[in-house]
Length: 446
Length: 189
Image 1 (cartoon, each protein chain N blue to C red):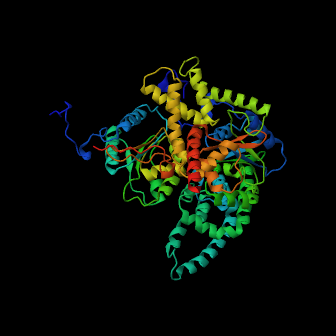
Image 2 (cartoon, rainbow over the protein chains, first blue to last red):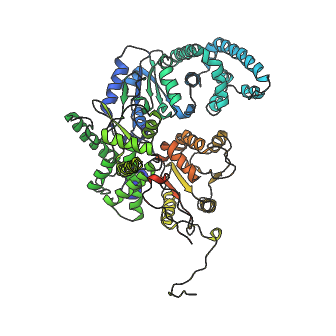
Image 3 (cartoon, chains in turn cyan, brown):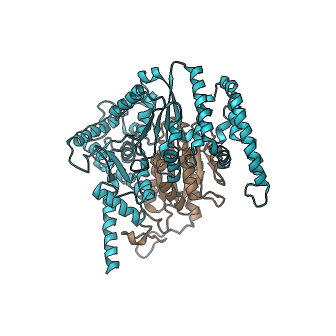
């Protein structure tokens, strides 16, 4: 990516599916620098070798990019940094603690044949257990009416455990189909779930051996990206609430991204590093700090766009950029998308500088996406309540909140307290429909 | 031949004989041109995602043919019976253009499953700098918005196209009659 000289280049630089990597460091703006510094400090100074730090933020808040830039010299000197990309390894619609442990062990072992020798006995022990359990299941499956029938043998041909054994030196990609095949995963869980402790122990042993081989003087730092994309509330509960101890039992320092719906959940205890920017002062109370933070954040958002434009090229008017920032609600990707769509209009209309007119077109485009799933009266009620009161009003409707938060219809902000607001792009629509709903209800009551 | 008002009377064409731009509902013709331009403006090595909804089979068919003509190297996938079909589609070389057509009768995955799978493969598509064009029915288009916002949010082009002469597809918020403020427009040929 090169800084843009004209609108077509800017259009290309703002492509929503383009994420900044280390190669694009010149375009990176450290929006969360202060929090990332605190996070580094915790990682370096806290004594616990199993330190677990939870990070959350809304879709498009730039947390994945910020975490890519987390390792600095001090972190790299002390740790072997091991990023785990959720969607590369797991089916995020069907994931359990066993999957995480198995895949982590597998990932560490890939390309390390020495570990095969070291863990052969242990793996064989588990294999025996697996076999025994399989035979039990197999007997059951032979009975009439079984839904699985003879299919089990077929699955076992490429079962993840034998794949794990193979992986220790032979077939490094054998795990590839594990995340793709729900039947295989189910079978493995049936076998392993009663002994999650064993698998955790094995994973920890592999970590220890891995470090001894790779860097005996260092510790392991695992960064779990994208676990925040898990949508199913049951899975979220099982993984981050019921099995939190197991997750935290992995012998490494860990940074784990978690779904935003856990933030207001009283059942989820630990402190969460929230990454998100805001363009307005706190909606809950008057707080001079929050006004300062909002001003700083707006400036950072402005820099994100300016860095992608060649120095001094007048591609966007000051007023238009200000409007885009205001309507982004502080969400980085929303800002980029508004300007991307605005730029497309600009190129079509052959203008040289984006004005408020094009930005309004970009806003309309983004609004269409946000409103497409805003169709039920209960959703309108929730959105209107949040827009008015800046709080959720209890967690009576977890699924609805989760849906609105995941699709950025509700935006989450953090000052001294967490507060919520409706996405500025849909505020007007929600107000109109909320008024109409209120009138309809009043009529019915008459 | 002229009408009494002096307008040139044109013969009415069958939809299957219409050109790809004629078949679109009028406001969508400009959107379709923008979609084609968005393909032309792709920078080298940039990933690209488009989600296109079609409210009729004939529109989808015309769109598919037009795309094949425009991007001859496009690889089309239209059989969606299980999640493995997604795995197969995504094992293409980096930088390939993929047309994923979900509208066929053979599609056995539910709208929700399709949305989930697209979200699942989003980062792979981006990582491999694929150009991904998803052709969907209106219910599938809605499900992708509802279940896979992160996928739609990464898209460079998102639009539900309406066929000329068809009742317009439901717009956001008009799904529930009690919430509707604007009348849906029907343009008859």
